[in-house]
Amino acid sequence: LAKTTQPISMDSYEGQEVNITCSHNNIATNDYITWYQQFPSQGPRFIIQGYKTKVTNEVASLFIPADRKSSTLSLPRVSLSDTAVYYCLVGDPRGGGFKTIFGAGTRLFVKA
Amino acid sequence: GAGVSQTPSNKVTEKGKYVELRCDPISGHTALYWYRQSLGQGPEFLIYFQGTGAADDSGLPNDRFFAVRPEGSVSTLKIQRTERGDSAVYLCASSPLSGRANNEQFFGPGTRLTVL
Image (tube, rainbow over all chains, first blue to last red; front, side, top):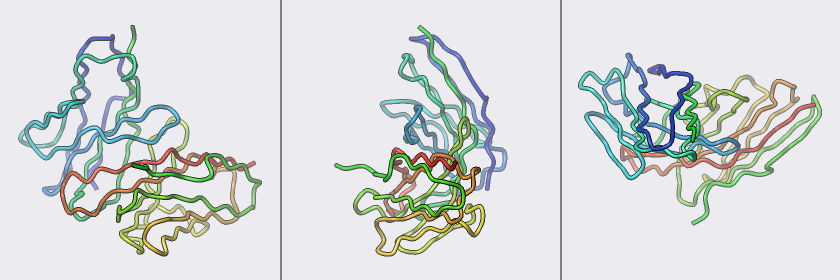
């Protein structure tokens, strides 16, 4: 299974764009990249998933370079409520499930 | 609609006791996952089911841990002879067996297990 590496923590201010980069040098051909968000005392929540290039939804954007060895989660104009832990995962979800490995995640702290 | 539910929300037990943790997945979701999360760490994969069968149980730490999903919906995680190191939040997640790439997992609120 591909291992992911993320910064342990990041600080930002309200209204700024936040970019969290994840390294996954051993990503396999069939692997997708998925990001989850977790607030204290809650289970993780799916944010976005992609395979290559760029994916955008109402919450975030995901940028994946051509070699797919890294990916960047971009959160536009963060607010205090975006303070959470963000996890980057890689795996092949198309079979209906896969052994999902969460790392330690990136703790984002948004300040006023 | 209803999300993933887990019961109990909190469980306090004594070392050496047996506990059962229950997960009710979203209706129709074929894949079900169990994770364990300790303070300050990411969720640790334990096991996942496709339907009634355990597709991958390689994350179960030892033979004191066992999980079942007899009818392909509700799942129970069973821990025998609990140890203090088993104290953690146990998370359950479910996802549809759609065959599509965007197969996100929907997590429950977790069961906080404390072994005294």
